[in-house]
Length: 368
Ligand code: UT7
Image 1 (cartoon, rainbow, N blue to C red):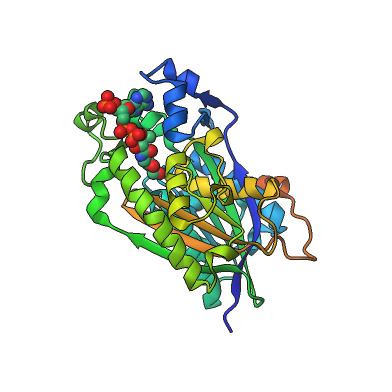
Image 2: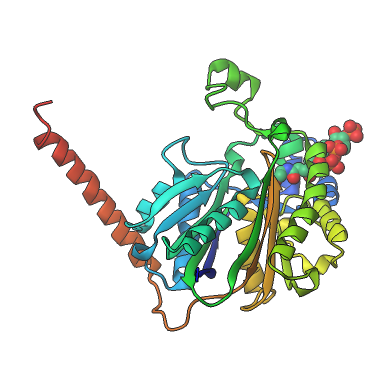
């Protein structure tokens, strides 16, 4: 029988720097009242110059591994879902793999915008179910503040930076990820995009002058799409898990706009307090928003071992999806992890490997 993919560790990392609505009102024509009423956001976190998508992802990953008490050397798979990767390539996941010393893990990035974490969770769970992968690390990480036009009040009020991570582990007992729905509709690709810097419009002076390296969004249309798909995906995923909406202890939606979450809760016919909301403090951290909210829900006692939980999101692509899980927690009897030690050891190992590569190039291939 196929094993189940249990969520045994979780961790989050957000920058210390807070940008409030009042701060934003100093740079664009907006107000705290407008932002709060139309979005539910009060403040968001902004990465410092030293912080990047990979550094936030690494911080969240080490906390999740510590929680699961899993040595990174035992990881088979790392997926980083992100829309603000460190580079076009190499994958941000490979940078994380090196920084945590997960020397056995295959690592890649998954790009499905704000739905990325749900897609990544499902792909990792399928890999575990296949039997080839025993332990996986799934991370949602963003530094969208680097892709925001700080003169565009339609977008700069929404986004924030942060990362969240789950550790998934195989076990024959029923639990963990029970079902998932993944959907997309590329006909809406123009509604939310960063048009410049890819192979369609490589970066030139002109693309930079046009601002194509910034997020472009048709907010109202994204809003309408989101309110339509959130309830549909949730209901389908819940049915596929052979549960009913009444069985669900908590819904953790993508934190994009409080009004979207309220509309989705109405369509699902669930009271709004069944949805976990922390948009007020972090804004929209894209694919990091669901794992960050999950970490806080556990911390606040809203999500407990055994609870059936729904994760639901939508985003650019267009993409949308939902996943149903039975929350697990760390497997009993495992030894506590030491993330600081992992970080130092991984750094030394990486430096040594770089040095050996240089020595190889100098001595072994000097005839080329
Ligand atoms: O992860 C997925 C990412 N994207 C989303 O989830 C976006 C979904 N969309 C939204 O959340 C909302 O559409 C927004 C928050 C972006 C905008 O709210 P809205 O209620 O749809 O506003 P609107 O675009 O219909 O604009 C209403 C008015 C306009 O003025 P006029 O034309 O009626 O005079 C805007 O110019 O509000 C104005 N406006 C603002 N006013 C103050 C737009 N942005 C702002 C602002 N401050 N920041």
